[in-house]
Amino acid sequence: MRETSFADPVRPALALVLLLGICASLVGCSTLDPKKNAHAAEPHAVSVAVSPAVKQDVPVYLVGLGSVTAFYTANIKSRVDGQIMRVNFQEGQDVKEGDLLIVIDPRPYQVQQEQMEAQLFKDQASLRDAKLNYDRYVTLIPSGSIAQQQVDTQKATVDQLDGQVRTDQAQIDNAKLNIVYCNITAPFSGRVGLRQVDPGNIVHATDTNPMLILTQLQPIAVIFTLPEDELPTVADHMRKGTLAVEAYSRDNQTKLATGKLMTIDNQIDQTTGTAKLKAVFENKENKLWPNQFVNAQLLLETRKDSTVVPAAAIQRGPDGTFVYAVKADKTVTAQNVTVSLTQGNIAVITAGLNPGDTVVTDGQDKLQPGSHIEPRGSTNPGNRVGSGQNTSPGNGSQGSGS
Image (spheres, rainbow, N blue to C red):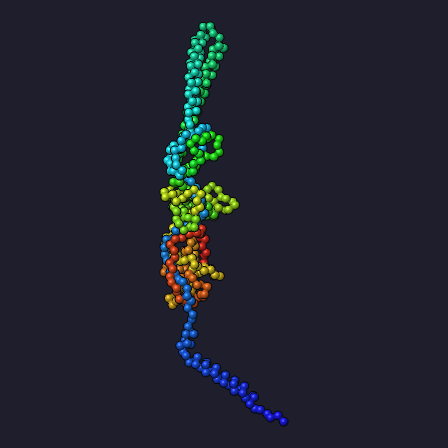
């Protein structure tokens, strides 16, 4: 007969009692530490970057892609046939208007001139004789000793010889003009390119390739494009005065030159929806070269005493545009603002903020109204606007002002 054991059900019960006692003691120790409880109750501070709203003058730029073009370009070709006797320039030389560049052998045209002058002398003599005979015939008409037909024929002879004299004079003038064409001069001041011909070469008036290319670099022009929607605004500001244009390098980091807007093209490119504008630059330091790619920044206007914050501070939500404004107790509130212009790395605020207010510029994704923050530092809005963007005034997102 099996003996009944009471130890088996008692052991698990004792183990359970001991385990509950240990947990109770741990909980009691935890609740007895007020410092830990107080620390756990404190709200977590979010590390964010902040920046103050400042008051400054904001230049408003329209930015377009452009290409430098010579103000004048001339493909210098010969207007006569002949042999090049002398080249009076060096490649890359700066020349003045009227400087002698190339001399073509003028002797064949000098000979032609002499021949035409001799023919003119002969025809003038014949004309004088014909006029004398005509005058004699006229005096004989009253006596009836000469027929009227003979007088009329002599008059026609005089006119024919007079026409021949005029033809001879025109041929002489043409020979003189060809002699002038043998001395090729600079039509304007500019820079000579690479030479295409050398002394001794034979050139013709029908040659397709130029002997040299002359470009004017001072002044020089930049042709750039802007969206067609910007043209009315640009035209309005042009009527008020001259607009400045700044040319920047391909990477938009180096300012090359400052000029002025000259004109707007008379038509819009329908394929791109843009229009061409032309600006002129003095280019005294020769930083602009024909066919160079540049970023053109048209200074449309300057907004005085504007409230400015970094563009990174602007947030957009269901209720419109807002920023996280920092309060004195290091908490934030969602402040609705009205943005009149976003350009470059700044935003111009017309309602909702005052100069001196502090806004969050980084870390907004971790915030909500009432969140505690720990500022990492203050960043002032940049003074330079328009770098690399083409944002016109009035295109900024509008929010409900407070």
